[in-house]
Length: 64
Image 1: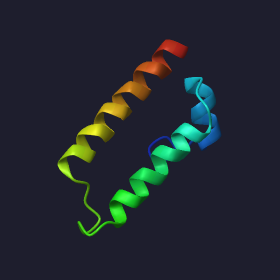
Image 2: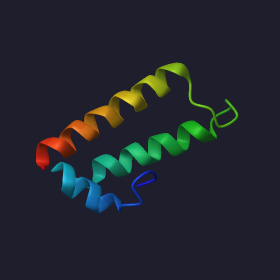
Image 3: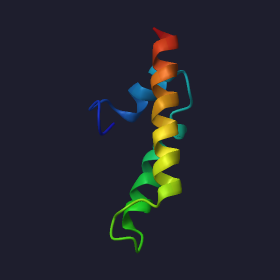
Image 4: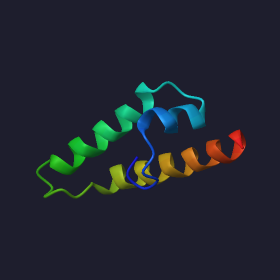
C-alpha cells in the first residue's frame, strides 16, 4: 500500500484479513482526500486513520 509499497492482497494476507478490508480503507482515504476540505482529512478521520494504522502494525507484529 502507500507506505510499504506492498499490494493490497499482500497486506491483507499478512494481516490475515479479507482483501476487501484494506481495499475499503484505501477507498475511504481516497474519498476523504477528494472532499471539499481541499484534500485534507478532518480531525476525526485523521484520528481514525492513525488508530487503524496502529492496529494494522499490531496485527502485523502478531502475525510474525
